[in-house]
Image (cartoon, rainbow, N blue to C red; front, side, top):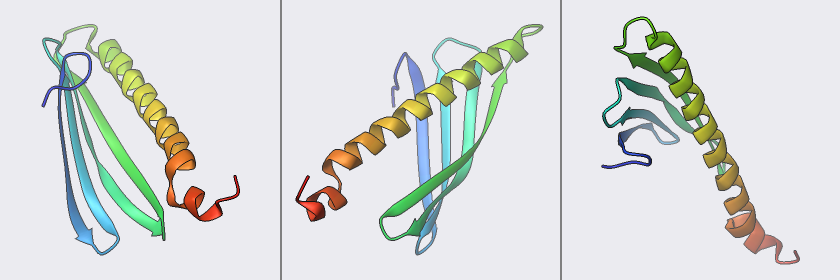
Length: 105
């Protein structure tokens, strides 16, 4: 599928237990010689609480400056994931089940 900013993205999760799944993600900006592969787990740590842990490998085929390109792309992924996490927390605070139960806010 097409992702943001002209990238291709692939994500897959496979349940490995009643409260755990393995996750695999790939991101490749279209036309750029850099790609990222993430591998990790998604686990329900307690009722209503889930934690995702990913390890990323970023690679580039560019000679000489490939390491700098990899670092820039890794920083971009980190910033994007931080923004996604902040959005998710804000959304759950406003719309999640605990908000409906409280009813007094």
